[in-house]
Image 1: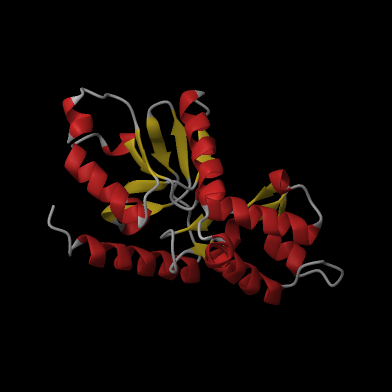
Image 2: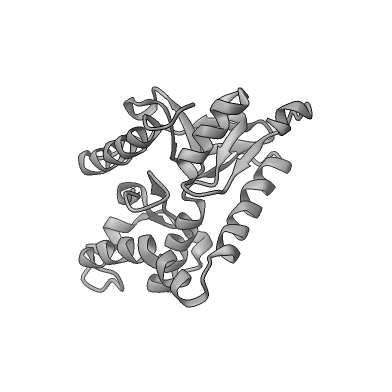
Length: 210
């Protein structure tokens, strides 16, 4: 309410957890355009995924394109069907006999990325350095009008068959906020995981008095 009173006309970037729910609340209470209210989503999770894959494959993480989608939390998942190392699909690499990574490793990596925050909190009580880095990345994309693809918490308005919910999906981010939500044709299993994650978010949204 104080931000609204000030006449602020910028972009709100939400980091507070549960970030997807908090972003929805912020959008509802602010009355701002949905594209100008963004959550940090799974930007940090996706960075951790790329780092882990780069380490396993002995490749610069900058050359890994892979995304964690859904809730920033226990129902998040990796869209493996769109994961690439350079121009090679991770699935293709995992199928090779001489590969440093096998199909059975992918589930372990996904679990490792999902649970790493718990390990960090156990060791040093907080994950502030990681989220600080992720927020810096998103802010840079906004201030420098990058049109970068980031897995921020974005409002769905029919994309993936859902609406009236914020969830982390690959989105193009620039000086106007979320310019566009990228609609990936997920495979059946991935679509089911996204549907489940969104269902959890909507159950929580329905409990709110806003």
